[in-house]
Image 1 (cartoon, rainbow, N blue to C red):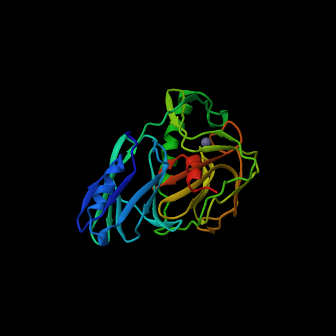
Image 2 (cartoon, rainbow, N blue to C red):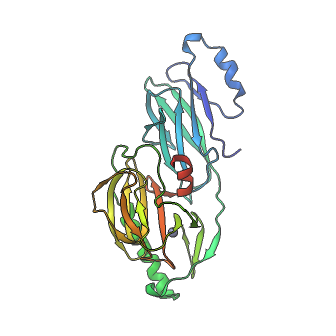
Image 3 (cartoon, helix red, strand yellow):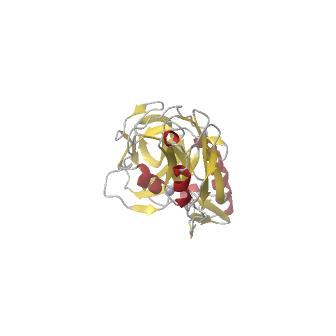
Amino acid sequence: MNWLILLIASVVGAGAYFIYEKPIEIQEPIIANLPQETQEEISISMLPEKVEQGDPVLITINGTTTVESLKLNGKALKTFMHNGKLSALVGIDLRSSLGSFPMVLTLKDGRTVSGKFAVGERYIAKAPLGIPEKLGGDTPEAEKELISTLVEEGKLISAVPTANEKLWEGKFRLPINPPIVITDTYGYSRVTGSSNISHKGTDFRAKVGTPVYAMNSGKVVFARFLRNYGHTVIIDHGFGLHTIYMHLSEISVPLNKEVKKGELIAKSGDTGYVLGPHLHLSVRIGGISIDPEKFLEILGE
Ligand SMILES: [Zn+2]
C-alpha cells in the first residue's frame, strides 16, 4: 500500500486537520457525529491511482473550489478548472525518490485537508544504443561530446519560459495523425559506451516530412536546431506544461507564435542524434519530463 493516495476528510472548523488513509470506513461515524449544518465532504482524487516514477499526475479536488492553496511536499501547485473541478498537474521525475510525500489542501476559511502522495518504483529496461557516424560513431571521444552537449542542450530546454495562466483547452491530441506506431517508449535506459542515457520521451514512427501538429493551444517558446535533438519546437501550454517535438526536418512556426490545437508546426525528420527517422515527443510538467503515453491517457482525446 505504499502507493496509497486517496484522501478523504470531513471538515469541522477552522484549523481542523485530519489525516485519513485507507481504510476509509472510519469516515462515516465521524461525519455522523457532526452537527448537520457543518457536514461537508471534501476529497482529493488522483489519476493515475498508482503513481510511479516518471508519471504525470492529475489531482482533482472534489467538494469545493474555495481553495487557498494545494501544497505537495511544501511546494504550492497551480490549480485550474478541469471538467468543472479544481485540478492540478504534477510531474514525477523518472529518478524521484520513492515513498510518501505530504499533501495539504488549505481552504479559504483556513481549514485544511491533508494526505499522503506516494510514489512507487518504475521498472526501467536497458538497451544498447550506438552513436551514429554523423555524430562521431562509437568512440569514447564521441561519447564524451555527446554527454556534454546533451547537458548543454538540456539547460537550453529547461530555460524556456511558461505563462502564468492556462493556455490549453480541453484534451490533447496526438502530435501526428494515425496510424500511430510507437517505436520507443519513455523511461528506458540507453547504454551508450560507459554512459546510461534515459529516454525521456516517446518515439513515434514517422517518415521524413510527416506533418507534426500542436497537441493543444499554446505559444512557441523554442524553435531552433540543436546538435543532438535536431530541429526542435517547444510549445508552452502555461502553468509549466510544455510539449516538445524533436528531430524535425523542418520547423513551420516562428518563435513566440501563438498556436491553436491541431495547427501544423513542423515536419518530422531524422536530424540530430537518431539512427533513423521518427518523431520524438517529450512532455514536461514544471520542468520534469514525464511519460507522454501516460499523459495522453489522462489528458488525451
Ligand atoms: Zn526519442
